[in-house]
Amino acid sequence: MPAGLPIVLVPGLNCSPRLYGPQVPALWRLGPVTVANHTGDDTMAAIARRILDGAPPRFALAGLSMGGYIALEMVRQAADRVARLALLDTGARADPPEAQDVRKQRIALAESGRFAEMTDSMWPLLVPPDRRADAALKQVYLDMCNDVGPQAFVRQQKAIMGRVDSRPLLPSIRCPTLVLVGAQDELTPPHLAEEMAAAIPGARLVKVPDCGHLSTLERPEAVTAELMAWLAA
Image (tube, rainbow, N blue to C red; front, top):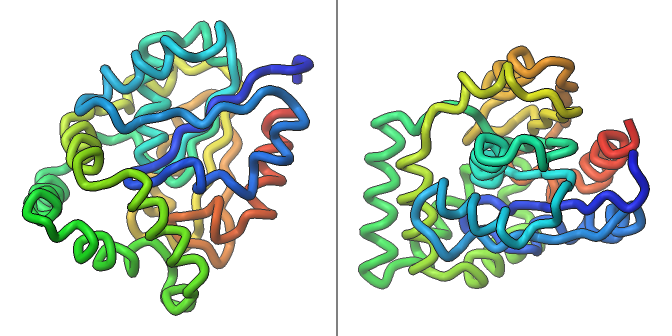
């Protein structure tokens, strides 16, 4: 890895810098670390442009879930600036109609003052059954939801609903790429990671055992080790 290569981390939907809290100390030793703010716009293109405007000229880029959608849009807009790419618990496909229907329901709840109820109902989808009673992990998730808030959540959902299919982009990616997914991820299942890794030349596919969608928080040591190896490869 080039010495001091800056690292840009993009959180997921309803997530804040807390998502990468376990990884930042280790990554910081390798180069400047920035956790992007992805809360101010309601399209993927605008979110990506805003992050690129504030990013270093060339950097390593990692995104989880919605952060992965954003990362792919950043590559679409400025591939020459992305030196390394990590796609965590995410996918390259456009939002299917059935997912959009669910998002519209969640937007309605958030806009009607039921944001806390809505975020609580999402928790079981994020982690495997044996982690759903993990009060400490759930509290981190709820704290992130409160960091984002209902208005930004609505903007994020609209951006996700409008995202383009990034599968045609994948074969053009030439930087070292890590594709990582929790083996028990229900929201972005492993077959989506397999699809991306197969299409990106030279991509490394990692499935983290006993792990759901919030891999950086559920299995922090394993994910940190994989990110360190990705940066050192």
